[in-house]
Length: 293
Image 1 (tube, rainbow, N blue to C red):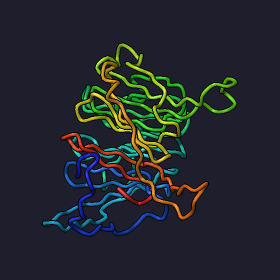
Image 2: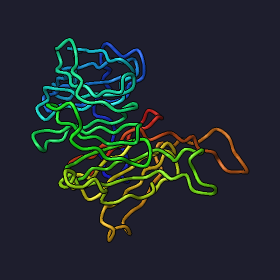
Image 3: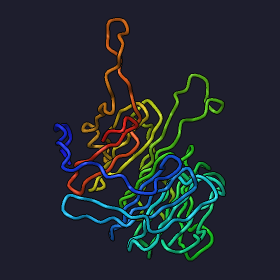
Image 4: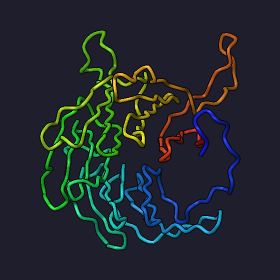
């Protein structure tokens, strides 16, 4: 992975296409620590692949699949890689599935679709979900009700956790709820998970540094900040500590030169930033709707 700002290195091996492709768009990918890959799709399927690597060659075999009641929007493995948590639209439930089993077990529910789900290795394992019902919920899979629930300003569009830091990004305030001449605020919340049992107050609640709809968010490996991407082909780097705000910045990416001129200037084709992933050493990669990374 190249450092930020460095030229892209030539690929060492050709891309590998997994067998048995989904019949609709892929909504999430999750990789376990025992080389299992799970893909979820808008076609309501959750498919598990066994990934093998020999030298620079990669191969994957579809080994299990389960169907949900509606489009699946998110997924994550537990710490051992033996169980998958997924959620989405349809019945608005979060489910746990052990690949190879014919059905999945319901572990939680929101009032509206669930956009984000993540497993956290604390308190013997928690599952945290963020939904379009303006809530973030904490689940102990042994209990039917959430052990904690946090209300946020709008629908949860993106969430990431590196304990103890949790970051949650929300949707715009709908036009019919907006006060006259008020900005189209999209908020980013930061939480300290070490205090979630005693307080649901965020560590910070700030307007998004980007001007357009949020698509993804990822925390730094050292939990000191996060990167956030938008539909406008732009990523912002933000620090949680207010004393380090002078180090915040944003940059353009996933853009291509257009084919026409407007007022003597060449246009750009702008693509959404769909995913951000950090390497443990701090470098990161982005993936966009232009098909590039």
